[in-house]
Length: 140
Image (cartoon, rainbow, N blue to C red; front, top):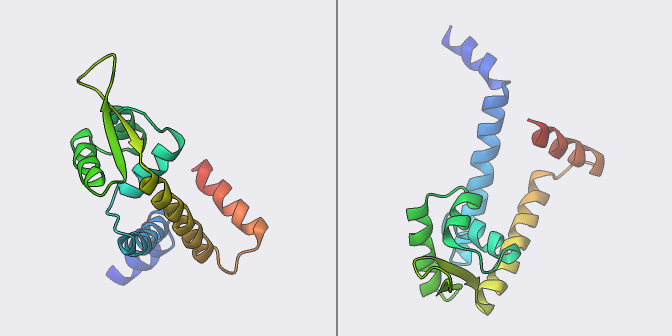
């Protein structure tokens, strides 16, 4: 009976997504580790590349990371000279976050890694199949 349940679940969206997410996360963690980044940091670099100077709360909300975790990640990123923070001129309790030159360089590596992982994931897919798969995932 147990084997039948596993067989049934094996073809479900839940299991397929779990496998995909796990494989993607493992590959990303491996590649980002090679350039000295930890979980959450690539997402922050990516967001800052498009929203440089945003406030920490905005980073937390848009990167789906708890505010306390963002504070910790930013402290480590500041020590690594990837970002710097400046107290907001209107509210000294709020900090605006900026990429350093090094942070911008590392962000380019992040983009390249995401591109390579996408290429690995879609190996053997036609361009049409690739677009269709992304469209289906976006519609879910």
